[in-house]
Length: 56
Image 1 (tube, helix red, strand yellow):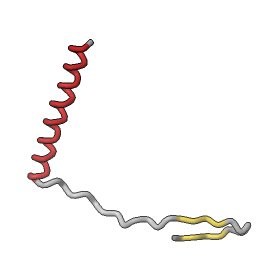
Image 2 (cartoon, helix red, strand yellow; image 1 turned 45 degrees about the vertical axis):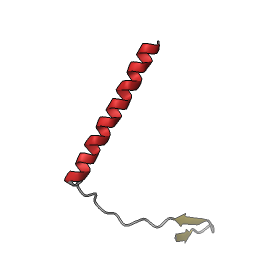
Image 3 (cartoon, one colour; image 1 turned 30 degrees about the vertical axis):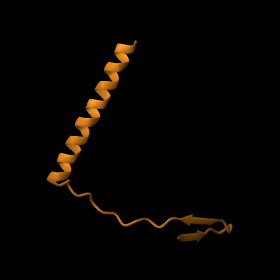
Image 4 (cartoon, rainbow, N blue to C red; image 1 turned 90 degrees about the vertical axis):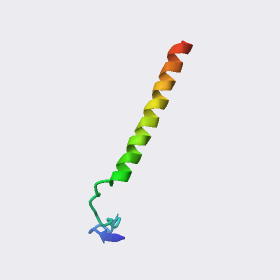
């Protein structure tokens, strides 16, 4: 932790910053997994909307 003290004796604490890195583009198998997850999410949301309309 990085700490400084000003002329009035007040401490200022600074957190250490993590090393930055760039995200990598997802692989083909990861993209397919995302596609499958989005299909299931769409199915669940559309089912919930249809159930809500049928109940009301």
